[in-house]
Length: 249
Image 1 (tube, rainbow, N blue to C red):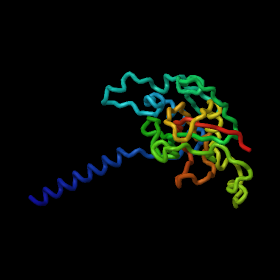
Image 2 (cartoon, rainbow, N blue to C red):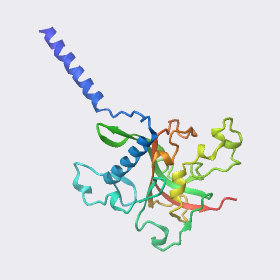
Image 3 (spheres, rainbow, N blue to C red):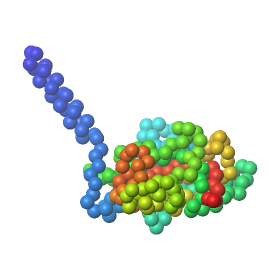
Image 4 (tube, rainbow, N blue to C red):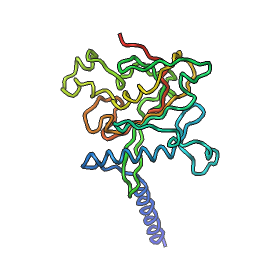
């Protein structure tokens, strides 16, 4: 009787382990980078249909069980725009400097400006799992909203100067290039917005979403170690508000 019980227990554990392994989404890098680029685009479009913005502009995932968000507007229905680089951006209605209350004229964001940005950002891998292309393996990038509560000041992934110590002291050819640090697709898209003139301690009201496919980020190139994780093939998702900008001296 004990042997029968042990056999049943062993079989149950084996089934559970197999089931757990089957449930884990895995990523296999496509040999052809064009395939990865296609995955990125498909995953971005899927992401836009599965998420919406709450009252403060935070990205939220639609619930399959809670009807409370049934009337929320999908990101895909918020007039997303796509740049030639593949970057997709959404300018959130009624959350821009021009339409704030009281009205404030926004400041154009320059390519080399010092920026102060409140943000929640992530990276993810676009993968094909049994014919379903979607984002997996999410990881945090910068999150000032749930972290310090203060804007991120002059991030190097937006702009870095040739005179920055990271570049002047670099010991490899790759690290001497701005592209080693900058997420070019993010820099490109952010200039489609205008900056507020807010104090660092002011409450946030996020003004947009930027999704940067891997080809407009670091693709498969070497890059700066921002978080301790590789950004190879990773898409970046930014949910943000530009509190203030100023011209770089």
